[in-house]
Length: 191
Image 1: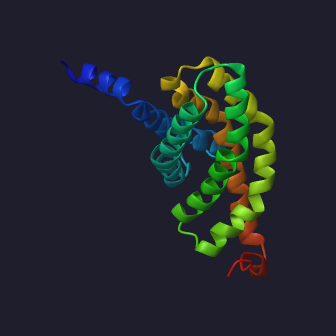
Image 2: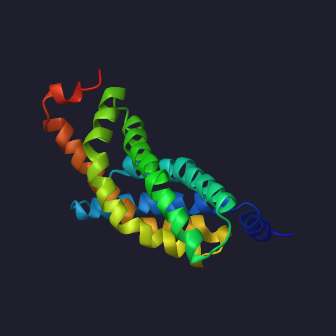
């Protein structure tokens, strides 16, 4: 059996690997797209930012999403409309807030920001981001739960998350500017 066959078999046997691989490409790609909208080019991209997105997407988002989808399939098996609605509703009120808070908090820590700044960022950005996410992700979740086979759900969501991650990168970048211009009293909210 050749190396390529072993690689393909590993992806079939361990669906988490497919998710991790797709997130390791899509999340840094989203960062590059967002930086391009900022006016950056190949000469001045922030490659460390891309690396943080790749690390976070592949090593945190993919495993937590895979775990959530596995638990959801155990609790509400099947691909019926009813199961899809239940999974979508539960995801919208549980996993989605967790994922958004984790994103802002985790990415802040990866940027070497202090704990209190990471919390301040979550407080400032969570609700606006959740409102946008709650208007987009339920439709995507229904498609995922009702039409996509379980073994392909993490890669499907990762493809859908390309645009979403561009939005998150945009929100994250806005936070950077805001923190730099914000009085320290706002950053000391949770000291």
